[in-house]
Image (tube, rainbow, N blue to C red; front, side, top):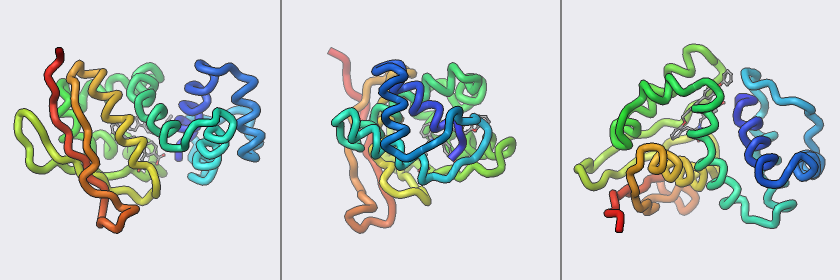
Length: 184
Ligand code: 1MF
C-alpha cells in the first residue's frame, strides 16, 4: 500500500501515544524504515505487521486498531491534500458511498500501483442501504466499519452498521447494512 497509509498509522499512534511508542511499534514489527514516502508503494505486509505490532504494544485488538485507523482516514486524507478528491466524491453520505469506485479510479490515474477495493450499493432507500465490499486484501472489514463511522461524522449523518456478509465465514464478499438513525 502507498506510504500514505503507513504515515496515517504513524500519525494516529504518535498523536495519541507519542513518538517513543511509535518507535517501539516499528521495532516490534521489525520495520526498519525511518520515513515512509507517501507516494511510494510498499509491500502490504509492512502495514499488516505494523497493525499487529500496535495491537501487541498498545494491548488492543487488531480489529480495534483497524477501526481507529478507518475513523481517522477521512480526516487524515482531507488534511493531507486529498480534500478536493473527497469533496468531488459527494456532498452526502449516500452519494459518497455510490461514488467510492470513481474516487479510487481517480486516485488510480495518478498512482498506478493503487490496488483499490471495490464497493457497490444495493437495496437503497432514503433510510438504509447495503454496501458490498470487494477486496484483494484479507481481514480489513473492521477498517471499513471504521471508515463508515468516520464518513458518518464527516457528513453529520448518524448511522448504525450491521455486518450482513462475512468473507471469513465463507461468504463471497463482505457486506454491511447501513441504516440512518435518529439523533436524540
Ligand atoms: O493500494 C493502495 O495503496 C491503497 C491505499 C489506500 C488502496 C486503498 C486505499 C484507501 N482505502 C484504505 C483501505 C483499503 C482496504 C482494502 O484494500 O481492502 C480506504 C478506501 C475508502 C473506503 C471508504 C471510504 C473512503 C475511502 O477512502 C477514500 C480515499 C481513498 C484513497 C486515497 C484517499 C482517500 C488515496 C489517495 C492517495 C494515495 C492513495 C490513496 O496515494 C498517494 C498518497 C500520497 C501521495 C501520492 C499518492
